[in-house]
Length: 399
Image 1: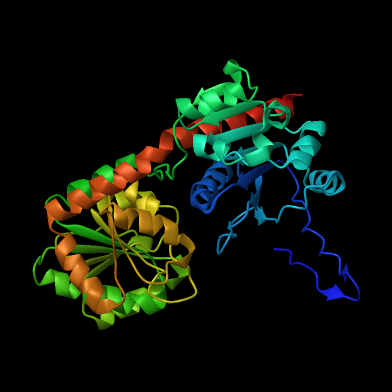
Image 2: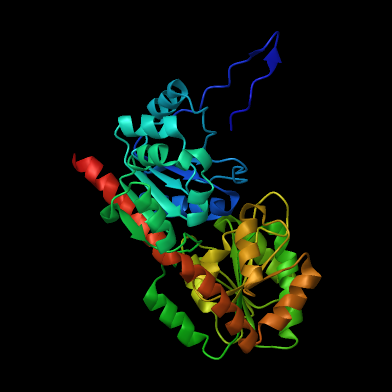
């Protein structure tokens, strides 16, 4: 992220560093107005890139919006330039966005003008009445009309926001009332036939999942499993290393712990005697979430890994446990905790205690239902915006 230059002499500053190079191919610009919108917009960008892997996403933020700890894939965070015509034109010429989603209601006049002049499709999304009321002089009728008419369409949170937009000069046919943009997640795919085979083999057995474990976390996971088996002796752990190449080390740890294991990479399936199923393969995470009512989202007990996306598990009906180092997804976990869908642990002892309580079927089901409600609430609006973007990109390709 560019930094402000240092001052030298009388009133002169070093020029800011140049922006990073523009990625090749299509690029969607997502502008985040307000810190509360950062997580939903990051997820929206991830969803777009999942559906169009060659797509790049440029994120910009309004006042008080800091970049996420990490951006994965073809994503860039860039500070906005000053709102002067020259700076705005340089910004648009450099990034050449194929479309722009602008959240909220605070406009940047020069930037909007430069994007419109360059033919960038502009969409105002998640527009709320409170945003439009806070606009101050920028929302006085003349300026408001001039800025709003540059948007090709607007998605309003509610009818009150839609009325504000109509009074601001947007035509009714360009305004849709969609509800608020919230975080959602599309279910990961799986092999349905294999799911049925495994489910039939595990019928009647309680199951929990440790997903994306680091080598240093395996000991804590196995300690928790042993503690939980004292109350539920048929309990099965599905252990998924983050990297399949860590499967050998995990297998050694299972041998040292004297736990009966079957290994997925060797073609084995769990039977009635299997205590741990080592799923050291790629691309099957959606299968394991569907089988496990409780998931420990690993890469979160040790610092430096950032944790994993909890909505992947919640979208498939799994209650969530996570550690203190899930720093890349703190907003996501906080939302699930507030809904009663997730529980935070700090070490092997607290993981054991949480698992022992959560494997009770009624407890796991209640937490899973709360998580599913959180995930599904944001799915419809996210899908609506995703379709809008992809249709716009397709039209651009056809032009």
